[in-house]
Image 1 (cartoon, helix red, strand yellow):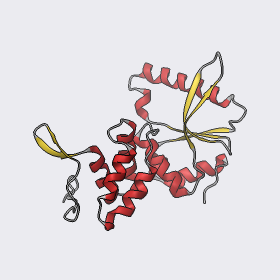
Image 2 (image 1 turned 90 degrees about the vertical axis):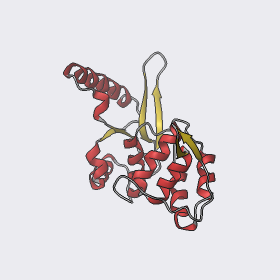
Image 3 (image 1 turned 180 degrees about the vertical axis):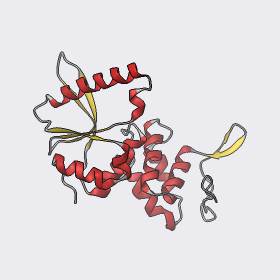
Length: 200
């Protein structure tokens, strides 16, 4: 075992999910995701689970079958992670944000909520706390590009989009979450509390 390779103990587990990939034996996406969920922290496992669900590499039923084949040591941990899996997470950062919400004890937000008006634009937000009127958006640098002109245009479009979201009377505020907030959850807690989202 090293920083790059982990040997999973499967002596008590029947073989499952094996397939040939470019001439090499490999486990299925469902088996791989569940192995990770049973052995790694939720913050690392949930992005993998969300990814296989979003891109239809595996279904929730596939994941459940793999969990059932686990030994007692990892089954509970994997089952809890699989129960959180969502095809609506649009990025690993969104998946990590969901883990932080759970650990901070926030209410369960709505994922990918749509704000729209007839004859106007439509905006889909990452997270919506309807009882508190708070939108949470997870910002990543990738969407802004690298060239200065691209960055400026992306920032302008994002400002127009946020102004549209804020124009809805039910929206009290928009919270922007960056990578540092995910790495340092107390920063995220402070942002949410200032916005009026309760944390336990």
